[in-house]
Length: 352
Ligand code: PMP
Image 1 (cartoon, rainbow, N blue to C red):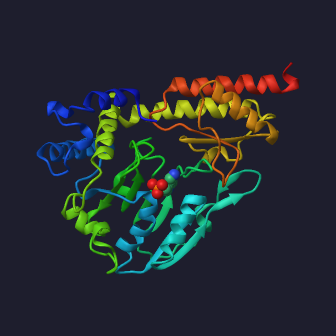
Image 2 (cartoon, rainbow, N blue to C red):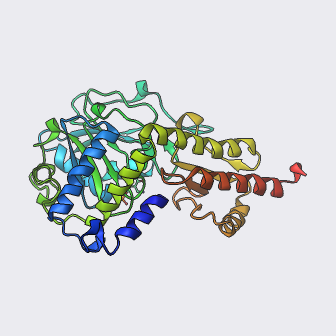
Image 3 (cartoon, rainbow, N blue to C red):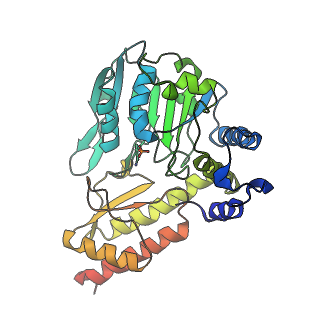
């Protein structure tokens, strides 16, 4: 979702951006006005996430999957070894892609007993010589997240595509963070990369110039044409977040939203099922299924009739999933929670 006030601003700017008489989708990426927008937005983002001065901010195309290749291409030039923690589809895909470019130590950390959890870090065999340790902070499909940072002497590289800006983080703990735009940063088209200075200059020779972090840092992400509309929407989202009270306020709201749904799932535990250990439950993607699988179609149908959309789980994981990113208002989650309560009570004979 995109927040309602951002929709309104887009409407206002559609034919006349900043009183320039230029439609917002026609802004040139090298115009003074757009460069000023980029400068202001970078400052806002630095302030919002508390990004230290020795970190570069980049905006590249190719989505987060693009970074699955570009992270190893840009970081494995001097030392071809890296650690990859795998506990879901996205961390696995990142690991498989990286294997094309270096000597990758795949560490399966998923614990699958009664519930899905994460193995203790003492069981992970990290490579002391790794150029970096890659992990995914939130597995969007299964609805699992790592709440504690992995401990490693190698720089941490995190795919934060589905939880960036959802809660405060200490950027100084990371070597590199990346996140596609189309969840908490607006709409598809760009990927945010936050990169510590000392990780520049270690790309492999074959890295395409357009995706070379050094090149793009030097050119302030304008080595090639930046998708201006996607960037512009992100700039409005950042302003909206500031108006909402910043990350701390948004994080409290996110916790409240997720709690609302997990409470219903657990309360109606004979009817709904969530297979994730509560320690690792995602605040952004609440996954669940119905004990009676045959009723899931009916659930989706009735939910849609109540204006509750996109609740089908990812095909690789099945079941149902409520993605409740920053822009989803509390009222939207409350409406789903009420629907889930009524649906469970209506369809469970023991409640009559
Ligand atoms: N990583 C994570 C955690 C994701 O959720 C996604 C997309 N859902 C991706 C990577 C892939 O992103 P993209 O489609 O932008 O390549």
